[in-house]
Image (cartoon, rainbow, N blue to C red; front, side):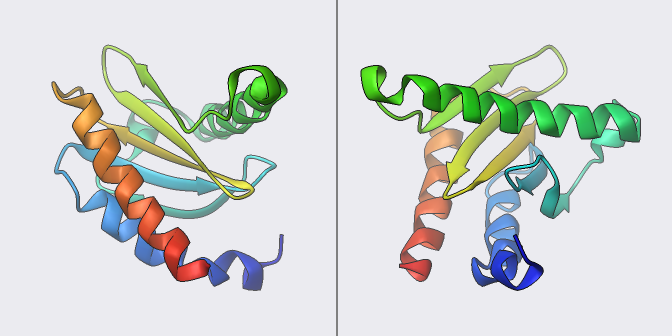
Length: 130
């Protein structure tokens, strides 16, 4: 994807909108289909937990998982989002056209409400594109 195409979607604005939903959100990243960062907004750097190589591998894993999920779309339907709860953080991932949006937050109680709020911001961005 070219940088012009990537900027077409207004990822900068969308990431700002998402990170401002909740103070527990530490990181919003838009990844292309190769696992490369297209846009990022950071409140607390993931570098605290990962060195650069592990961070790159983590992002590639997110894209690979999204790609593998598509193998079952015909039988089970399309995956709209995933939530991974860990001891130190919670990770949400969402597909957005050929991109994966990853949102990392501190552990919170109301995951579903936060997920819905994030999806609302993503859907608002889709309306602008359409």
